[in-house]
Amino acid sequence: MKPGLAAARASRGVKLGRQHGQRPSDKKPKRVLAMHKEGLSYRMIGRNIGLSKNMVMEIVKARSGATVLAVVRHANEITEGFGAAANPSVV
Image (cartoon, rainbow, N blue to C red; front, side, top):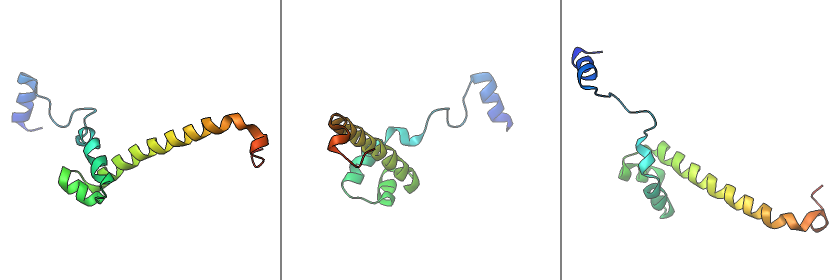
């Protein structure tokens, strides 16, 4: 470590680097999802917001995966009451 950085850390308690648990993308998922819904590509969303296209893709997949899971759970709850007699393919 360079002497100036070591002194800043030791005497003034300066924390260097990205802090644990902080990601630049944590504050931007609403904007990313809104732009994705408008039909913009991952690359264009990333350029407009300041994230990589891969980070944009991760945000969209994480959020859409949660949505798909919620829809599947809801569908399962609806069909539970019908039993095997209503759906003979289920054994």
